[in-house]
Image (cartoon, rainbow, N blue to C red):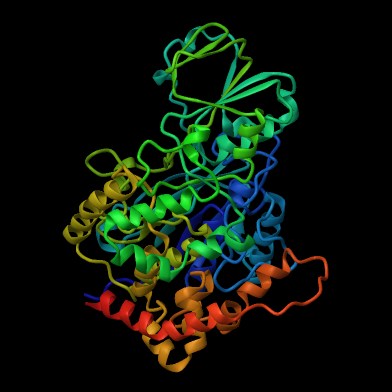
Length: 536
């Protein structure tokens, strides 16, 4: 009997991942409906003065950690006039431009929450879902052939109060960082931030300019990276390259670790600032902050170890030091990912952990008609990652791409857990290697850049694809969903990056081309060696 082809699809959320999922669904001819709880696209990037239950929340000063050439959708570059790293209001405007350009808004039902999804009684044969939505207090149930969940992982705060002895005695204010909005609210106060992640570092630096005293408590430390990297270029334009990924693949782990630590220590000695990670070789996501080291050396932020206990008015750290008269504690302790609108067993494994094949498909479903988009974490931007995930997911749902058997998917997941524990320190982490992950998913679709072919037919482009940034445009060069502007975007990406900062006209100067010439001479043998080792 011929399998029934999916034709209708529900998309939950219209943030970065939801917009990509909606656009990719329409590209393959699916009749898509996107449900958005708020009145605007943007998800996490849609700033609100107060945090609301069930919605992601950011503080007013948030900027992107990925530059615009690496943070865009693969077939829609961010406008030239935008800065390389964007304030949340600027990036939100880009998301609105994307939605308008691809005519997505008419497919989105705003102020409509998805309250429940469940398999239809005949799911084993049809793969269909009942999707219950609520608008203006009225509920409605609709049958869809497939569902894409695009709610992200910054909605449900992780507030592990049980891990902090004496917190129940503490008389000051404590909160999760999702409730932090403006620094002025803490002027003249003694503030403790718990957790050294991107949010914790940002808030500590910002409050260091207004609060009376700021301390930052870290249990395990972290590498600190600046957005501005070698020669003033954005960090990800320099670091996220196929060449770098190739070196990580062929070099012995001990050499790879040494090079990684050397790179992370290039700006300053982390030990001298109390920031060095407990395990220096793990590839956990570093903290992106341009000002933390300066704040520490200027004394506006003081780094402390883990907390031993709380008293009524103070905090005692594990080294015996004490912070007296604490007014506010901000827990920057991350988020839990949950899907309260559906049965947990759909996406969780036997260990009660979310387990998805390639970070997208629940392996135990009888029919692959539900996928999660945008849940993985990597050093790359979320828009290109979500785009590739969604393109793969809709093709699986349409039947043009096939998944392995359930047993094969579970075996691969178990194998990947071991690899993740080795590289990132935890087996259940959402973290993944950006270049490898993007190449793997794009190979499923048939849009992975063919370096050997490019080397023979377009050497200039091949050079940039291998040695230059692994930018989003690479994944729309060929195959399904090809974008005809991809080649031009790749070859002009450095010029656009420079133009975003070079706002004052300066006299031209002749740069030495000896290094570039040498690289071009070495390019072909290096590329051929990479291809040989990759296919060996």
